[in-house]
Length: 151
Image 1 (cartoon, rainbow, N blue to C red):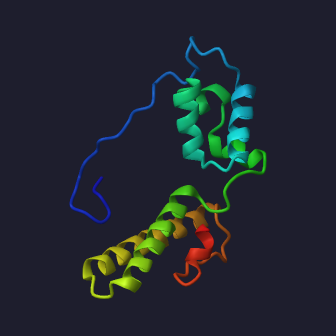
Image 2 (cartoon, rainbow, N blue to C red):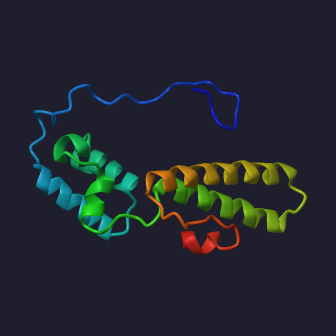
Image 3 (cartoon, helix red, strand yellow):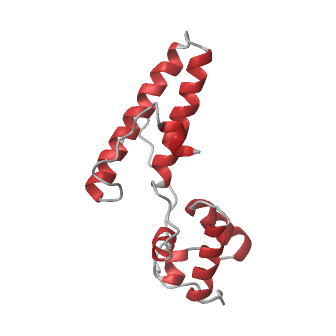
């Protein structure tokens, strides 16, 4: 699989363990992990930050293997899920930062080109999430209101 906006064809990625059961050395139950997830979400952390903290501080390698459901699904069940998906949020944040840079540096042609690439990625993701029903069908990305979405 090639990259979207570069010439790379790399396939380097991490691999999940084949065994889907929790490790034998893990002494924490699924309910305790779900409580940790909701507690960290109430502090305002994103799902990926929650996963990193659980892995590094609590020694939980995969939330799904312990609880049976992923972090975002646990958050949805408790009404704590983010309003827009995390990857889309970060792309919008990047677009806002590049647009702010372009207000100061109008002649920066490379940033203008990169902004076009980032926004095309945003539109592609929005199309996917609308089809997937993660976003409402009326949701639109507009560069003028994007800074209000990420604040």
